[in-house]
Length: 214
Ligand SMILES: CC(C)(COP(=O)(O)OP(=O)(O)OC[C@H]1O[C@@H](n2cnc3c(N)ncnc32)[C@H](O)[C@@H]1OP(=O)(O)O)[C@@H](O)C(=O)NCCC(=O)NCCS
Image (cartoon, rainbow, N blue to C red; front, side, top):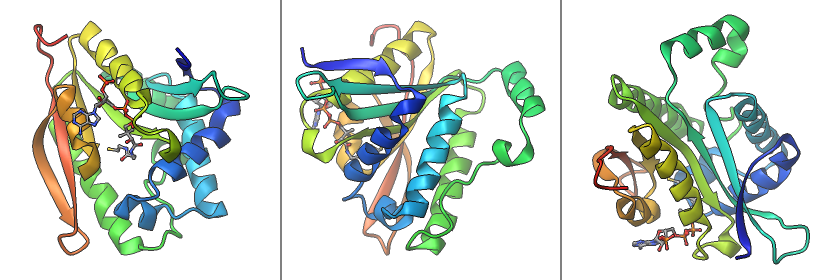
């Protein structure tokens, strides 16, 4: 089986960023808010480095061992439920800038869209996840040349398995083409936001733990 799952490491941040820009090239919101240019690339790399230093974040990658150098073709960012103690400990050891990292780059192509969209997602997410033991799927992306080969499924099964093992729910924000993938894994639509004059709908989806589902 040439597709293998492994934890991502600091040395992978450039490859992960290549996968991000490739996978989201056709996503109307992400392409406007995270256009591929050096400053935005650096912003994404900085975020990946923060994630790699965060014990709650499981940054997992799929590599293709049939290709030279076994490159990363897809990755996911699974955020485990944070206990109140862990949140307080993290707050005590990080400075204010690290506690409130930027949600989007300041030099994207549509700053008004980003300034509405990402805080709106965050607010909705915090309300829906409150009071639940809940994982958050913060990113799932496959290089466009490798989509449809099973890498996304491997990454989904990693997080679904981890959530089921602790009888936890999972929350995700889904762009339109990915909704069938999440439905297949037991997520349901619990809300939405419509932007770009009605041309783009982002769904808020929840997978509630169900003993019979795993
Ligand atoms: C979403 C994405 C990560 C999926 O990755 P992928 O490697 O192409 O996905 P896979 O081929 O492994 O398919 C994932 C699973 O969903 C299933 N699936 C795919 N399309 C489906 C559909 N239309 N209906 C039902 N199931 C579907 C597949 O059969 C597979 O399940 P399996 O592993 O049990 O066979 C990829 O399409 C992508 O990067 N999209 C752009 C970025 C993006 O929008 N990310 C999500 C942000 S919310």
